[in-house]
Length: 261
Image (cartoon, rainbow, N blue to C red; front, side, top):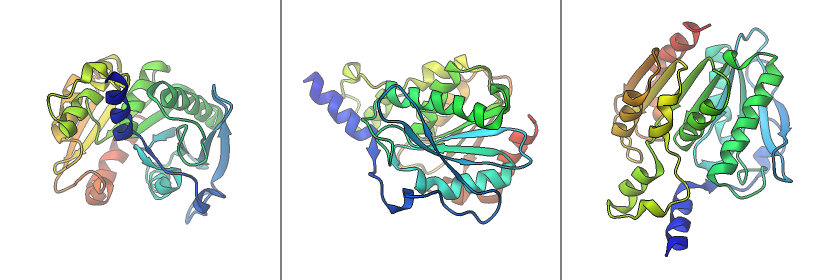
């Protein structure tokens, strides 16, 4: 029974996509320096696949933690947009089990992969942790929160469409009677975010049909950061958040980044 419950939860959490031709080489870019392909060593025999987007005049780096589906090639337009708009270096990577990063994803593994990716970003940019931001979307927001609790004080934490914890999400998707106490995957963001003092910016779509905006707001309220910002994006669902957010969102992101440069 416990095994069945945990297996069901894992199938809901992780939706990795196998590698395809879009991952064979780093993508071309419309602006800026060429994207560099990297492999980040981890605790398993299989290193993590990553793309680094350098910026010649950047004063900080940004680690992008993607959601629970697809692979890093699907996030290329977002990485290129963030590099151009925020004038920063960007490191985009796949957790174990996603794309060309082999293995089986679980909470401990993907969080370790992300911690190592953060350290790699510091090495690539030759900047300290206080000059790095972590950007997490959906499941990536939970991973970003966990990573921020493990590393030195960072420049900023950006969370898009975050959830409070896996138990709450299972309750949303499977009903309030779901026996969450048996889950091994927890991603307890609501319990972890009070530990983070870094400036934080949380945004969420008002019409998010997957992760209720109330969960994002609960995380914002639980944050103990003295510099925190909230943005609810009108008419945005889960997967069109950046598109619908448009100029308003980009202006807020730029303001958040620049005010802490």
